[in-house]
Image (cartoon, rainbow, N blue to C red):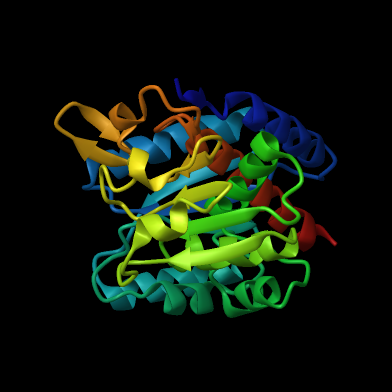
Length: 276
């Protein structure tokens, strides 16, 4: 039977370290989370993040996106210059007409905790000390938690997004893993994933990864959260894995809690950097 990993214990360890770091600062870090207030799911997500942040000693203030792209960019510029704000999170979906890159540029590298500013993304790509996107960082930490040192491990990424696949590839290369990136144009996905020690999927396609995609003993990190007729599901067809000796992260309680912990760590790091 497959075994399932939840991220609560690892997240608790990370959060304990963040609390220690926050306690050493002169004041609690303050982060503004911009979001589409009309999106009920995103509003609920922001409220959960706000509660987790409070437990870590971080003030997270949800704020609706302004009404038009020009106003969004003005607000980002204001936040970039606000000495009382240490970090800003731009929650998806972004408003129509606002790109992730232009938002990061308006905000500046110091307050970017999503790892999308060219200074942060470039440092990561070059193997220099960097502030990676929280989900990518969480995936590396979970992979190490489940598989130990990643040196020499065969890891296949399913999805090449700018917030998961591409930055995660850099993090895994830094750990000396052998990394294969697959995506929508890959012709025979299973031919790649069957060779992997670890498969990390963030494609957003329910049921994409089934028993025929995995070898016995493989570890699968399912990053995707898709809403299905019976609740939340990832990319992995869990039912097809019955009788297989594989390890799969739970959806949404596998990668999710660790991603939140990594985001809080990024906020604390941004605040510490501004305090220097």
